[in-house]
Amino acid sequence: MKLWIRNANFTISLSLTLLRCLGFWSPDGLAGNKRLLYNCYSFVFFMFLLGIYILIQVVDMIKIWGDLPLMTGTAFLLFTNFAHATKVINIVIRKNRIQRVIQQANAVLMGVQSEEARRIVKSCDFETSIQLCLYFLLTFVTTVGWATSAEKHQLPLRAWYPYDTSKSPAYELTYIHQVAALLIAAYINVAKDSLVSSLIAQCRCRLRLVGLALASLGQDLKIDYQSQLSPAQENILNLRLKTCVLEHQTVLAAVTELQACFSKPTFAQFTVSLIIICVTAFQLVSQTGNLVRLLSMGTYLMNMIFQVFIYCYQGNKLSVESSEIAGSVYFSPWYLGSVKLRRALLIVMVRSRRVAKLTAGGFTTLSLASFMAIIKASYSLFTLLQQVKQKK
Image 1 (cartoon, rainbow, N blue to C red):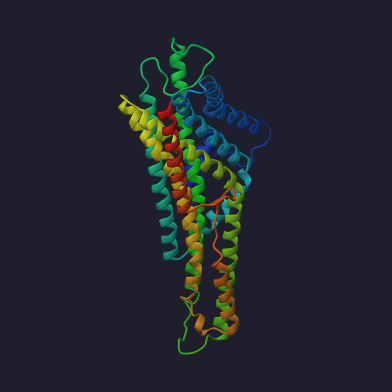
Image 2 (cartoon, one colour):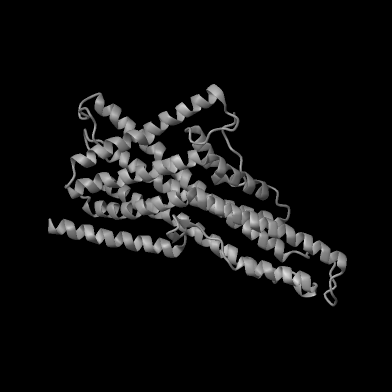
């Protein structure tokens, strides 16, 4: 069984490999006892990373109910873990559907021939790799800060345990569990978000390739620009146009599949992120005396904002790329073709004006406008919490 999963996009390769190593992306062809063992391995890791945390934080939330500072201290991680668990379960359940989209896109991007097409594929890979590096960096600083900011005989993160965590060796074992689970879960979360944003980026990349193909319909034909296209040349252009239309429809079908697979988890993520950004900002202004904790909370706030941003940025660019296909038709020798060819090109242009878009649960489109709306709503909620705290 190969652990490293090859893909035209490095971010997708790394994300899928991490998910496979931790039991959330099963290898193809597993059956019988091997399948059972892998499922058991998945369950154990899920409980280690998220299940135990969610249970003990829910109990802790019940015990401290009414104490606003303590509740916000527990809530921001509890909501993070809920969103995290939702996305893990979604990927495991819809693994086969997601894999078909990945394989289809990979076959197209690995098979490009022209230099310009390869440049488009490389630019997509470079962009998603930069996003992955920034996301990993923010996550690394945040998790290391939390792990090292705990005061003497205190755990890095608030939680309730059915035993005294201040005594040895319970304290050391609990500390190790919190830090290990925190680090691994954080990087798995990065992998999942990067996987989704990179799949959207690949759809964008494929749309750009369609636009390139439309713009270069007659590039290698010896066209006399003083006369109409010959019947043979027009036949070649019709065949190429048909290929472009089929690929465009395939990309739109892939976008629809991504919508079906990730729309509801994305909505859950946006809702949770809105609350987390607000609560983290509230915790940030409440921090005093612990500089490491203050810095880690600051990077966590940036981390959550960046998490929402990559979804909205890629969704926004997807809509822009799909609308620009119509402009690519103008670069083809449409003016030399017959009425039939011009009509076919006009249909392509009209169809591409209906842009491809992704939504979060059908409520809001993934766009930069939605990103700003989430930030504004978080700030409004933060202001409300500040007012409640001042009244108390």
